Image (cartoon, rainbow, N blue to C red; front, side):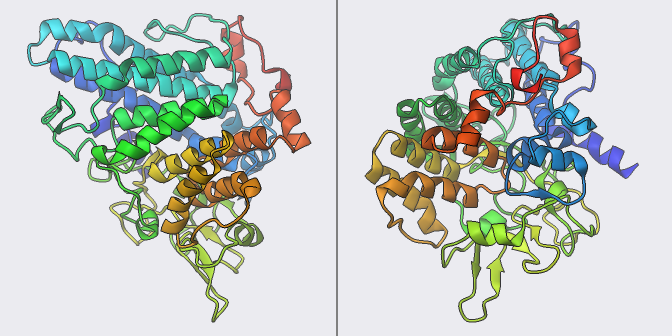
Length: 494
């Protein structure tokens, strides 16, 4: 009963969605309230898709990553890239229908929101323009997310109201170009911050709320440029990635974001708690609006005693792997005290015992330290300024701007106590990805970083063969194949 209550509560308040249809077409698209409901419903659908079965972390952190499954065979299959394994969770992760529900929801809004503009004078032209821009950005982000998982996918740009007609797959590059064009077409229609007056936008009272209520919840101009930077980097268009990520680094303060301290990164009420402006692209589970849940969080996978009342975590990182990753002295995230030889870390608890627990993210209820009732309120953060700074460094290094790349890398290194990078230029890309591995641990990046890293380095024959044969993508679930005869299984998984 508790599980059912919490799961249902995770879909209400700010990100309210209906379990059957997002809107009732006969009674909607008439008022300002309808616009708000449909807008936040689309965000809610995407959050649900990313959190379902802890998908974001299984896609990004568990697949061939540093974490190992403790007992669950389905998680073990994912760590070994055995994605044809007959487990319900693996099967669910192979089904893209929940993402197309997001795309359809956004497209319906884009097609229908103009009706509200005609029916309700409270819904201003500027409000309409900002809302449509958000839905195009959310749709573009969803397509980018899907291409990273499945490669070639159907491209749908017209609303279907839930009727998913048969569509052929389109080359992933075409889909990403569509997403890029969409973002560029609307990026200047997005404010830096909602609930404020700035940059020509009068969003001081956006849907009745002022900043910081909307921080970290809605896609703003910084969010759009962050997504553009990642699309470009995934395509290997590093000149574009430099331009987009530099824009973010230059202007992110206008949205209220800041670089986060190591303490704030690991606090129970720090960066990951609720919503805040430093979550450049994020999906919160606010405790105060009863959005917390037992699933859809890294904590569900990684936490255990003594933090919560669970004997063993579902995934853990071996001690020798931890020591090899955090191999520089004075690292504020994890280090060994030179006097005692004991570990000093808020990233992990119980290091050196039989039950090392990844505890970087630990937002329990209302920032509680009592884990007797494990309900989580941490945000799913896709990107933050530290991640974009490291992407900027990667992009600069990829085009040969080594001095500027080193300067960007050193911003994060200095903030984490390990000082300047003093190695040779030949090792700079390795150093950047090593820093991403440390800084972004548990945030859904490791698998995608491995793909980009191996494309850049081009020296791991086994991984390059995986890329060449399409093994970096997920198989397509049989349900999808059975309902759409115009698509076939990814060749690697046939």
